[in-house]
Amino acid sequence: MTQPIYAAITGWGSCMPPAVLSNEDLSTFLDTSDEWIVTRTGMKERRISHVTATELATLAAKRALACADLDPADLDLIIYGGVSNEELCPNSASGVQISLGAANAASMDLNTACTSFCYGLAAATGMIRTGQVRNAVVIGTELISRYMDWDNRNVAVLFGDGSAAVVLEATENQEGMLASMLGCDAGARDTLRVRGFGCGYSGYGITLGDTFWDFDGQQIFKRAVMGMSRASKEVLAHSGLTADDISLVVPHQANLRIIESVAKYAQIPMDRVMLTVEKYGNMSAATVPVALVDALEEGRVEPNSWLLMPAFGGGLTYCSLLVKWGNRVTPLGHTNDQLPPCSESALTLVNQIRKNQDPHGRSKAGLLAPVFPEERLNRAYPVD
Ligand code: ACO
Image (tube, rainbow, N blue to C red; front, side, top):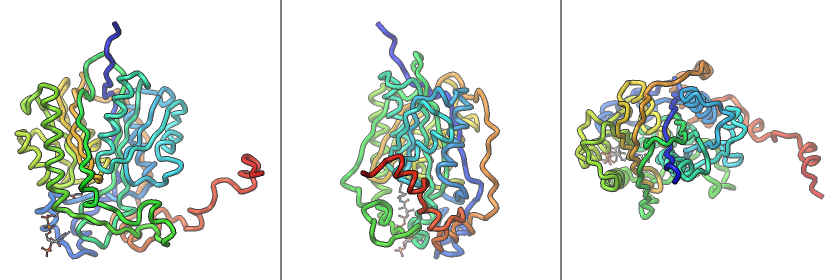
């Protein structure tokens, strides 16, 4: 009889854009205050990216691969989790694949909003455990600043940009994600909708930054607490574990008060909860992996310990993952690659987006110009 296969997390890396947008910056163009934002959400700062989502994701994946000492050419699968993809076709995972030089990988995007990384980790674990692939990179990346409704204080203060990735590899050791509970409170899908973002809005002359968020914060708050708490309870019961077995909770970080409620319901003290909400805000799909990488870098993940990862997102999707960490909590290697320097302040970048200017300085004509000259396309794919 063959040994069961597990999917160990062997590499991890994040890529945080350097420009910091403070609560004071937000109050220069919104009717809000540091006091309101800190009291209601626990957030003080968030990051605004000066580079594309693919650049963030590629560097996070490179760092994770170096950490695992895995050659990109040996990679079987890339899952790109997120909701702020630059394009729908070609997908974002293929953009990361070409930048990594991972010529032998399959590449797919996965969008369950803020839970995209966690759903991706569950999907990749399943594919490794059933032998379809031997390894995978799972990425959570968001560039929410580009489609934020910056004039809406209900949402503009809550989000930030960021990226992180993990490497999974097949192992006979019983570690990695050992249990998960995934769900979707679809009856509440209307509580969070980004209007203007998606092909359903095509033909209405909508341009970059022209989005309007339908956002029922109080409903989302209640349902997030319910969904994450139920999923965490089920995943622990299914595994025969209790709250005392969990060494660290690495939750989605949409609001400090949501996290405190979930921890209280699970009877896990806050000193066993990883918090990044104060410095990064809510980075949607990037939130959980960035918090995981920070936890590892701060020495908060102990060898052979149990981690719980509850999350929720638009849809309203929710989940909780139970992860058994392996022996190693330090990287095998590093890459020297860095993001290009950022010459603008976060507030300048945001003001460019608010004026519908492209922060990369590209013109609309340039963005819409074909990659291949028309005659080359006709030659390669003759119409008649
Ligand atoms: N600054 C100042 N005042 C504000 C701001 C702001 N940025 N935003 C809202 N207000 C005002 C409102 O207009 C309202 O004023 P009113 O009483 O005169 O009408 C008042 O503050 C209170 O608003 P509430 O919505 O009652 O505030 P609440 O305590 O519920 O906090 C919040 C709002 C932070 C959005 C909270 O409901 C929340 O965290 N919800 C869930 C988090 C969430 O939805 N995150 C994103 C989901 S996406 C994801 O992560 C998957």
